[in-house]
Amino acid sequence: MNRTLSTTFAALALAAALPALAQSPGGTLGKIRDAGEIRLGHREVSVPFSYLDDQQKPIGFAMDLCAKVVDAVKAELKLPAVQVKLQPVQLSNQIPLIQNGTIDIVCGPATNTLERQKVVAFSNTYFVSSIRAVVRKDSAVKTFEDLAGKPVAFTAASTSIALLTAREQDKKFQVNKVLSPDHAASFLTLTTGRTEAFVMDDILLASLVAGSNNPAGWRLVDDALRVEPYGLIVRKDDPAFKALVDRTLAALYKSGEFTRLYNKWFMSPIPPKGVNLNFPMTPSLKEALDSPNDRGV
Amino acid sequence: MNYPWNWAVFLQPSPDGTGTYLGTLVSGLAWTVMVALSAWALALVLGIIVGVARTLPNRSIVRLATAWVDVFRNVPLLVQIFLWYFVVPELLPASMGTALKQIQPPWGAFLPATLGLALFTSARVAEQVRAGIQSLARGQQQAATALGMTLPQTYRFVLLPMALRIIMPPLTSEFLNAVKNSSVALTVGLVEVTAAARAIQEYSFQVFEAFTAATIIYVVLNLAVVLLMRRLEKRLAVPGLAWAAGAGH
Image 1 (cartoon, rainbow over the protein chains, first blue to last red):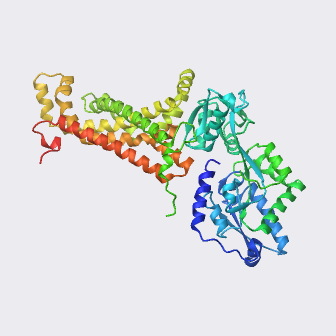
Image 2: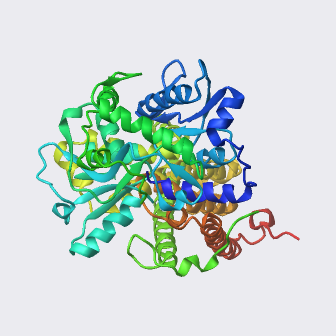
C-alpha cells in the first residue's frame, strides 16, 4: 500500500508514546479465557480483505480467516462460547491498538514489514500483493522496460514512483510519469487514453478494473516491482497465540478450505455490488502457502 | 510532542531520482509561479473585457458577459480544472482530444490547470472591473459623450483609467488568490509547491518540515506580490484623489 510506510511511522510514533502493555500471565489466550471474549480489529474499506457490507457488518477474506481463528481459540480453551467483539481500525491505529490490548488480532490487509516486526508479530503470510502495472488488454507491454518513452500513470507520492525510478536507473530506460492525486484519477488517465499503464499494488488495480465499465478491456502485467506479504497482526512475544493462528492457517491450507475461501473473495462476485475481482492466486502467494513463513520486507 | 524534527531532510536525495528534496521544492516553486503568473495575465485581460462588457448599453452582450461570470464564478475551481483536464478532451473530436492528451507531462497538466485558474479568476476580476466602472459618477460618461467621444474612446480615455486605479486594492487580493489557488493544479498531477510538500511528506515522513517550507514559500511569494502591487498603486495614483490612492493621511 502506498501509505504503508508513513502509517508504519505514525504507528511507531504513537506506539512510542504509549506505555508498554503489561501482559497478563497467559498472554492473549489467557486474556480471552478470563474475559470470555476475543476482540477482532477490522478495516472498513479494504475490499476484499476486510470491509463493511451494506448492513455495516464487517466481511471479507481476512474476516473469514479470523472466524476460523476464533473457532480454534474456542477449541483450544475448551470454551463452548466466546464472545466476538468487533472494533473498526485504521492503518494508522491498528498497531497501537494491538499493543495496548484493545484488540487481539487485526483481520485486515497488513504488510509484514521488518519495521513493524519490531513492535508486533505477524501470522504466516496469507496473501502477497505486488506492485505491477495495468494496461489495455491489447497492449504489447510485458515488462516495465516495455514502457520506455511512454506516458505512465502514478498516484502522486506513492512508493511505486520510487520503485520504478530505481528500475529505470538499473535498466537504463525512462518513462513519462503522469501524476494524479489519487488512485481513481490515475486509473482515469489510463481509461481516457492519456496514459498507457498505471503502476500500483496489484490487488488495488484489480479492484479498480473490476469496478470499471469494461473489466475485460484491461489486464495486469506479470512483471512486479516489489512483493509485499500480508499477515494477520498479533501481539509480539506471545508465541502461544501466534502458533495457534499459524496452525489454523496451515490447517485451512491443507484441507483446501483456504483455496475455497480465496476463490470466494477473489474469483467470484462479492458484496455489496456483486463485482468479481477475478484475481487468481499469484505465483508468489502459492510459494508462500507451500512453505509457510512470516518473513517481512 | 514526540516528533523527530529533522530540518536536514531537504538536503537528502528524493526517491523520485531528480535530486534533493530542496530541488523538489524549488521546481515546485517554479511551477507555482508559472501557473500563477500565466493565469493572472490571462485573467486580467479576459476579466477587463468581460467586466467592460457587463456595463455596455448592448443588452445581449451584457447577458453573455453575465453568463460568463455566473458560470466561472459559481463552479468550484477544483471541479473546473477537473473538467478541463478529463472531460473536455472527451468532448472534442477524437483527433483533437488525443492530441491534447498526448501533450508531454507536465505540460499536459499545466495547460488545463492554468486555463481553469485563469477563467475562474477572470470572472472575479470582471466583477471588480464592473464595480469600478459603476462606482464612477455618471457625469463622467455623459461628459465624455458631450465632448463627442465614441463609446470605445469613452472607455479607453475616461472610464477605464479611473476604474482600474480604483480597483487596484481588490485586484491585489485577486492576484494573491491566484497564487494560492494555483495549488489546485495538484489535482491534475502538476507538482507545484503544495504537491512537492506532500511528496516530501509521503517519502520522508517529515510532514512538519515539508509544510513549514511550503507555508514560508507562499507567504514570501505573496509578500512580494503585495509589495509590487503597492508600488504600482502609488505610481498610478490619481493626483488629488486621495481615497483612490489610499494615502490620504
